[in-house]
Length: 443
Ligand code: RIB
Ligand code: CA
Image (tube, rainbow, N blue to C red; front, side, top):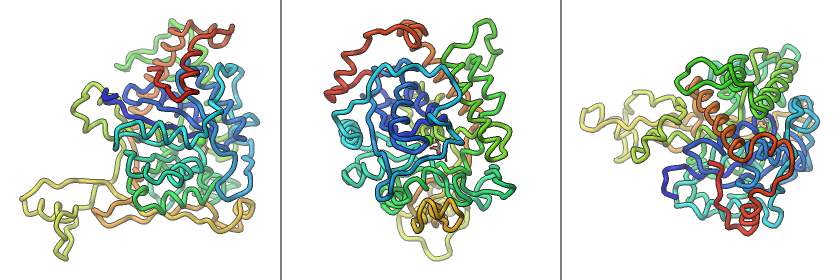
């Protein structure tokens, strides 16, 4: 489909912030959502899968976005039971408005195989995999199908935590002790849930150079403050005019803000972050939009980009003569005024601590799941880890996607159809998804 949209496979563990990643992936005008797979993490796999189906139902996409069930535990570790203090007992606590799922996950095809087939059906160098839960499915995908590493455009991950002033973000305190990680002193949840999966990804050089990582250091810059919640509840025209106070908020918007209020309370209670909860996962979806600004063929989509800041290369010109063709050579040539410098952002080597059990890490005995990023010399390829993004633009684009979801609900017969009586709309699409002939999309 050469309409300029970016094909995306989303793997997630809904999860309050995962719900917003689903909305952004399903309704961003420049994204073609190929499918969703679920993974254990914020709750059991059964619960994260049901939550994904409910969110897809709430945005009128349950029949048009195929849902597959992924891993119930880490690659090489015993089942992991997430505590319920962040996302609640169901994994998506805080609202009574989550609709009953209107479509079942496609049980006949394992998630990794479905993802492979959907990605291989895209032109080489165009599709992204986005993972916003444990990286188990993502690692299993590239381990089982190594040719996908060359085929995809990129892999975008939400996870990890760096500390050390990587960004100005506040990472929170637990019992008065400043944290780097959120699940332990050192480890972020998605990485700790499956450290070997993270290590397998970052240790694959060809995949690492195609990988963007959104760590807590970045996601904690994007807090769902009262202002952001008001924007999502009431909506605003893209021009930023006054919220349209005449209409009552839709059920979808009310549900989303109730979820954010719950998430806000847990982040305030557990981490002492009172302004609002960090909306981690949709940032990993937004990161795939980086290429939009260079897509001159589709200028209409560029306004939906969400710019991320990769620290530009420092202007130091290497003293030893740079080898031909390297970025250092380009920069050296630029300094001689003979070529325009190609400014690329920082790139990192990322390593993961895999020694220790989950229990030892939670007891503070090991740093299992800790991620360490080493800045690579200019021009050397590695993991992209942005230092920031255009945060107002992110909220505006997310709100526009919620507005598109509202429109889809209205087009599907209105709220009563979603939250009310049965309907048999889209059974053919679900059957097509089952047979792998899926191509229906909500946008
Ligand atoms: O540490 C934050 C991550 O863990 C987010 O993806 C959240 O949804 C949980 O999965
Ligand atoms: Ca998640």
